[in-house]
Image 1 (tube, rainbow, N blue to C red):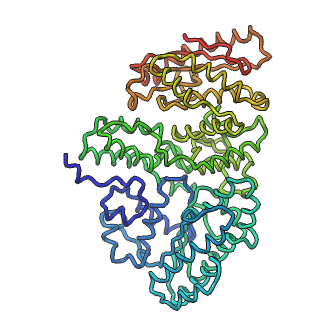
Image 2 (cartoon, rainbow, N blue to C red):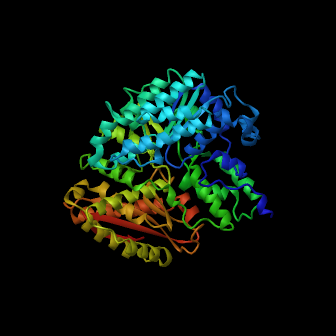
Image 3 (cartoon, rainbow, N blue to C red):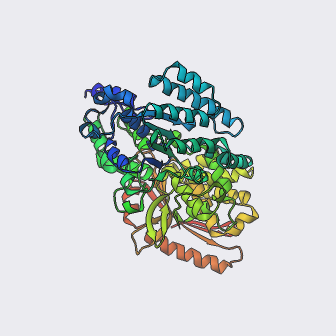
Length: 581
């Protein structure tokens, strides 16, 4: 094998020029350029974090920048658009702003925004040769909005069109909304005469003259909705089918990448086997209802993480399928937890999703920050963050489900974090030790004794009122925090349409030493139920479990481990039955 000739894996790379000059592998998305040009001039696009948005913007900047004309063949040769260039190629002055480049905290926000934009504006003037006098005139003005207006005026007078790119436009939103005490300040900045609002007003004014095209990305539509009455020129293409695959990878693209690297490295697995290993963790995203039935999308960052680690690991799966860099940032988790608590105690959105694996709601394209706790808006926000994906339609509503195990781990971490909010920390090391013994020795009973003890200690009176959904979600979260298993909740067994509550599928590709796997049937009865009720529920669970455990998917994925069939019956907050069939 001649490893040095293989293209570099661009894991974590966001700079288009670096990617091309360092001979990196690139999944060609340049075919979407004509689609973008055919769309409205002011393009708004939302995708979850680490899905390829920044690299897309970097590529578009290089394509449209008039200063990059001489580098076109070097940067786009061999790609789709290199063979099919559009008339707009290299005809704009490109202004790029990344609002994640400065802190989004409210205190001192205007000053940080002004300083950052000033640096970018000066760089713009220098790049396009406007001279020292233009720079001096710019610096006589105060504030990002006023300086942008000057920049636009200069370009208008010289008849040079601007293509404005704004990456992570909503970084400000996510930082502010993570802190309840600052939400009033957020509204002040995005309404009326606030600095953020003033800046977007300046963009709108510039769109009449020199700003000919605008491309904005982020992870939620909340900020744009709050700005809408003043900034109403953008078109939201987030859920349009033409752009469903503009970032992320299709399965065809993933297969092509694996087949390419197989030429240079010793792979221990077939392409089919690698796809099957990645699919539960990184696949199953759909961003447009019209694309239901088409192949779903893989998270591109996670695929690159896997391939990079697989090659470096000489044909072994990475020990951790979840890249720590992709975890939703803590502040955003905190915001969602806090907002979820705004629902009535029996209507927790997160609890419902954990219990059922999905939810049905109206997909909202935009909504103001103060209405996040509206159930449809909250579900839509989870969708935009990538924690839910579209799986179907139900009349005028959309069906959502948790897309994969990467997100599922975050959802379960939610629940563990809510327990910690009550100063009742789970004994993580103890749980991990017990789960290891469960996987290696088949010693499963201490795990459920631990869960029963934790359930009683963690549960408030309000939690206990939730009943079955709460207990099921708690059990699921606790049993699924181990990296040794891929948890499947309400597994479609294929037997008379039945479902097993939890199947702990062993991660044998990563941990071949696992000797035991588990399929669980959970039953819950309220504390007022009689012992006869408990006995009937137990008998029903036994009968169901025997059928579910015989499903094809369980037989196919648990071997060569020993499969344990467990009946777990909760009587209120007490573990009434824990038995193996």
